[in-house]
Length: 247
Image (tube, rainbow, N blue to C red; front, side, top):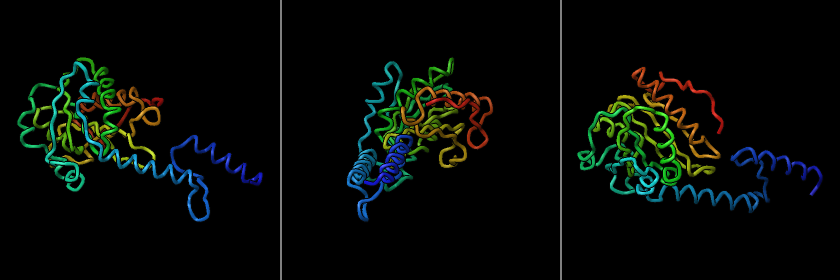
């Protein structure tokens, strides 16, 4: 290998240490070098596994010792239907809806499998604990553990429980560089079937150490929740006023 080629490879290697993006991979003939091709195949397999791995609500409940939890399902009866019919993932199973408790709470947290059960298994309980610890005297509803769920399922949960604010922690669609990314969606006074994405605030890529940290996510969520209650709104008119936090 020539001196220029060695220097170029060292440069790309240094840059790859600063990003998860696949840059400067080089080529072997008309294809990727074997090492990078195998890494790509492994990432693809991890993404598929994240989508299809079953949700285990007991894992979340174990991480929330002492916190009441309620388990629900969406109207999607199985994973294949869930993937093919997003609309069913936005609606509660009627039987489960009837069993949701009703109370005078300020906020309800919904932990939903979404498109990555791995993400919620690894991160959701820690985010709930860190956020509720910052909410002081807020009245926290039992945490709802939702299977085969989309973000909008939280609208129906909050409406059924009589809660004005809902935070949905959900596994985000896995990519080729991240299969364990957790998203948090905050909605004030949701109306099932009417509320849109413009009415929500979102924090994405919660997955330390490569994404947003638990304290960072909790600080931002607590700040947004406080402002949402003060202003009576969420979405495009609610801005994140917390300072930028280190990962």
